[in-house]
Every structure is written in C-alpha cells, then in structure tokens.
Image (tube, rainbow, N blue to C red; front, side):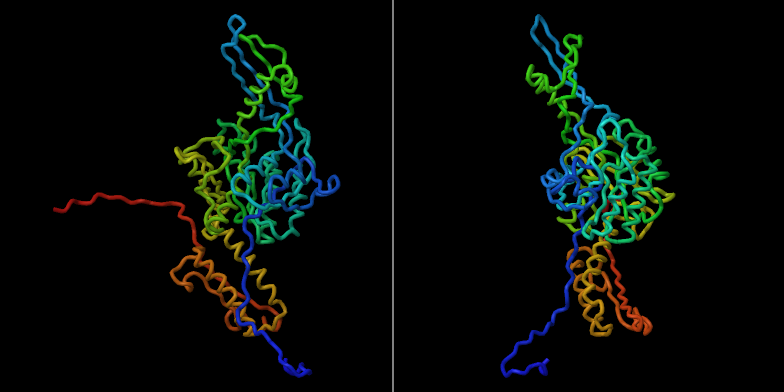
Length: 478
C-alpha cells in the first residue's frame, strides 16, 4: 500500500489478474500390499510396514528382494535309445499347485510394469513364510492397509496374495479396504475373484460356482462403488524362480527310471540334460491372479486416454490366456448380478485378438450412478484435484470476491476436461455447473458459522457397454 512507502523513489507492484488454477492429481498410483523377501533400505526390516514409493522393478528388488524360489518343481526326461543311441528325448516339468509359493508380489509387479505401470507404492507386511506352509495372516495384511491412511498419493489398492487367504479373511480384508476408500474418497480397490474352495488356476474349474461363492461370502455390501473384481486367473509368460539344489530331475530311458538327481548336480555332470530341464521349467505357465496386470492397464489407459476412458477392451501383455475359458452366456451372469450387483469383470480370449479385459463395472453393478469403473475414478480425480486447489481459500474472507475466484477456478478446470472429452454436452453449460454464493448454496447462518459451500455437477461420459446394430429388410424400389 502507498501509505507504507517512506523513501522517495519508484516502486513496482504486480497485480494478479488471472484466477488460481487447479493442478490435476495423479490417477493410477497403486499401492501393493503383501509379503516380500526383505524390507531393507539401510538396516534389516526398516521398510517393514513403511509405505515406500518405487518407479521400477530394479528399485523393488533393491529394497524388497526377489521372488520366493519354488522347491516343489519336478522334471522328467524321457529318452528313447536304440543300440545305445538316443533317438528321442523329451522334457516335462510340473509343479503341484499345493506346493507353490503363496508369495507372488514380485510376479504381480512384473505384470504391472509389463502392462504400462509406472510409479507405485509397496507396503511390506512381513518376510516370506515357508514355501510348503506358512499360511498368510489377514491381520498382517490389514496392518499394511492401515499404514496407507496417512499416505496421500496412492489411488489404487491391490493385495496380490489375497487369493491365498480363506474367503472369510478375504472378505474382512477387502471390506476394510473399501471402507478406507469410502472414508478418504481418493482411491479404488482392484480385487481378484476368490472362489472359496475352487482353484481358479484349474482349467476345469466351475467359474460360475466360484463367482457365486465370491458374491455370497467374498465381499460385503459396504462401499461397493469403490471397488472392482476381475477373473478368472491368467496364464502368464513369466518364469518361475526355483531352487536348483532341491529341484528333482528323473531320467527315464526306454521306460526305466533312474534315481532322481538335483538340477544343480546335472549342471556339472550332464549339461545337455541340465539345459533341457531348465527349458522345460521355463515352458511351464505361471498362473497368477490378474490384479497386478489390471493395475498396469489402469495406468496405461489413464496416461494415453484419460481416467474417464473405461479400462476395458484392452489387451493384457505377458499373458497367453485366461486359465478358464467361458462363453457369452456365462459372462452374462458374471457381468450382471440381479440380487446385489457385485459384477465380476471378465478376462477373455478372442480369436485373432489375444487375451482381453472385457468388463468395466464396479462391484456396484446395479447402481446407475456408480456402475462403471471409469465414472467412479473420474469423480475421485476431480474431487481430489478440486479439494487440494481450494485449500488455499481456507480462512479467506467468505464474500463475493472469494466466491467469484473459486467459481472461476473450478469452471476453468472443468472446461479443460470437457474439451478433452471427459464430459458430455455440446456446450459447457450442458457438461457441468458450478454454484456458490448466498441464496444459492449458502444461507446467512452458513456465513456466520464459517462455511463456504460449493456445488458442482458434472455430466461424465459413460462407456458404450452394449452396441446394438439393428437391421431390417428394405423393399426394393423400381
């Protein structure tokens, strides 16, 4: 102010004319919660239950280690010999599902980055359990979830190993995750289908029975709009990590089996058979729940098209096929649950197209407002962006000058989104409205009690889930 000047001279004053702007927040920053080989930045265990941001698989291995090595792989080498000359040789590797490691965080991260993932958060809840046992503990995973309440950046929650919990513990854990999303309103849960006693790695499994178990016992009724489920599991091209010192190889010559030897022994004594055995192990499909890949697809679609584009009709990378094949009739029952919603988004294979994510619904599949993943996540994005931008007006005078600045700021932001295709309407007034002021959104009492109330309405674009082509005969005209 001029009255503060005391020394003669020329002074420059800059007068702000532009309204403040809204910086869009990130939309696809997942937090992976589970067990890791280690949790070390400087000392052993210093990253346990400490959310840590990474941006590559190299960073993950530096801080959290690699996959748990399988100990139950068996390889059979079938040889046919005639007069001491080998005429045919074939290697077959197998791994019983019951003997597989329950810890798949590393593989989930591989799928995430292979499908377009970028920065993410890791919450290590404990070191790996024993390979042939060591049940996962729901309360340990829940403790990892609780650490994320104070971390602002994550927008997606993923539990890669949750299928290995009982369906009751699975429900408890994901109900807590959905509740956290509802409370914070800035994140979304990606969950895998849980079939109770049905293995979703078994090609002969009854998929609709697994879906029914999931709906009946797998997840509660609270905050369904903040989550989406995907199934069945997927066969990936990832290689198993395994321990050569306990991996048995049996050589069968003309139907006669020799004593089993460990793979590391063959490396020194019979390198040709050693390489064949390793090749057979690499050829085994590593079957995994899809959530890690889905999180990567969310990130890729958000970056290329925007959070308002449904993350569906997209190829899944590093995958050969879903573990269970099914028809349109079966997907009808997965996609629509007339009782309680709880839609399950399908992963399917189409001839000439590969493995595709073929569903875009939240668990609230019967809710016209929040049926689609893209709509829920778009509102999360706008709400969080506007919330952060309006914090600068806390304790500003609650008068028309402030109201005009706030309204202009939000309208400019929504206009930009409308131009990008996030909102419907040929004019901005068709796409959104922003209202603030006494007699509009506030009363005199609101002013006295320090409340500034802003009402925002948006016509979000929705996916064309069903495209109907109508054909009819046309009479020939002479």
